[in-house]
Image (cartoon, rainbow, N blue to C red; front, side, top):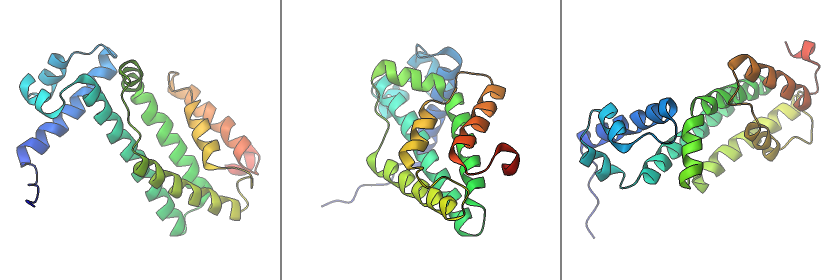
Length: 191
């Protein structure tokens, strides 16, 4: 059986440019951003865009898959920092803040995904993120910083209800209120 060749360097660069342009164009113009506009913003021919992504659904799915991969990498890095001595609660807090901000930035992309029926959760990526988050929560519970009944599903529920369509001060206030429910400390004790 012949081994698959690695993609050419220019193909890898073009794919990245297309994904970056799609994220930008959908954020700026909403779910109706056109493939022609995305190709122009990426600096590639429309045919090049369609070779990488035959449909807009494929393109939006790829953007969301990249986003999910980034979140999984982020929570794994947070777990590693906690294992290295960082306070697990601080890592959970910072992770939640980053996810909410990234989701707010990608809000238009998520709206496009919903409209197109684009899938983006790779079970392997979701499992990686869930395992790392469970480890972080367990460490924070052991430290006495997080209530013993907090689960990964609780964190996912909170993230899914974050006010990502609100201004940054509202998102910051949301995080403050959420942490009060997760942690064993009062707001003043956490600071």
